[in-house]
Every structure is written in C-alpha cells, then in structure tokens.
Image 1 (cartoon, rainbow, N blue to C red):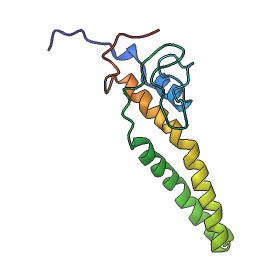
Image 2 (image 1 turned 135 degrees about the horizontal axis):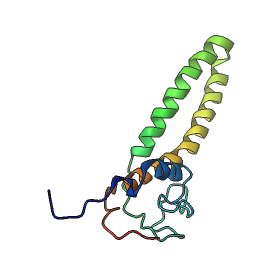
Image 3 (image 1 turned 90 degrees about the vertical axis):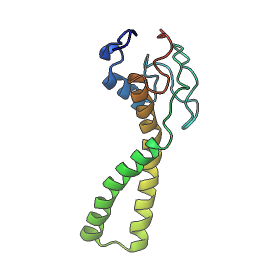
Image 4 (image 1 turned 180 degrees about the vertical axis):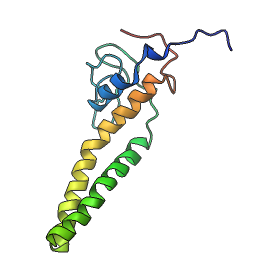
Amino acid sequence: MTDTAIIPDDDRPMRPAMLRGWRRRCPNCGKGAMFSGYLKISDTCAVCGEDLHHHRADDGPAYLTILIVGHLMAPLIMWAFVKFRPDPLVLSTVFAVGCVGLSLYLLPRLKGVVVAIQWAKRMHGFGTEPAHG
C-alpha cells in the first residue's frame, strides 16, 4: 500500500454520472453542457468549471452505437420481411433511414456516457486535479 490518500468510491457515483452523460450534461454538476458541438466535448464545464478535456472516448461510442443499432435492427428487418413481405427496395430504404436516425440519436449520448464513466472512475487524468464546484 502506498502513502497516498485513498479516495472513496462513492466520491463520484457512477449511476448519476452516467445519467448526466446520457443527457449530454457535465458529469460533475449535471447542469452545464458537456458538448460544444455534435460530438466535440467542451474543454471545461461552463457552470462548475470541471475539466473535461481529459476524456479518451476514441472509438468506444461508435462501437457501442453499431452494437446496439445492429442488435435492434437485424431482428426487426427479419420480422418485417417475414410478416409483411415488402418490396426489397422499400424494406432497405425504411431500415436505412431507421439505422441512420437511431445512430445519430445514440452516438452523442453514448459518448457522454463513456466520458462520464471515465470521470467517475478517475480515468485518464480526471482524478489528478482538485475537485471543482
């Protein structure tokens, strides 16, 4: 064991942070916007001043989005094809629009969740500065 102070696990609870991330809000205060663009994370929270530039979301949110959309849409496509027997062009058009729409909805929310998890677990530099707010 080292001489450094042990940080309590409940200091940054995971569930509220993830819910704030899903709402695209600062994982610390839940009031400030986490994003300055569609997928661009703000460097700091405008409300509490929490540094958010440490995040390393990388491709994680995209993989999660593909995983969720694929697992939702594949069974729906099979069900729609068997039940209604639509023209293949109609089926592919409807589900292409559905896949794109669902992906555009999920991607920033899942990125917010990934950044919030990193913040709650003090990963990638989120735990090195004194807490703000």
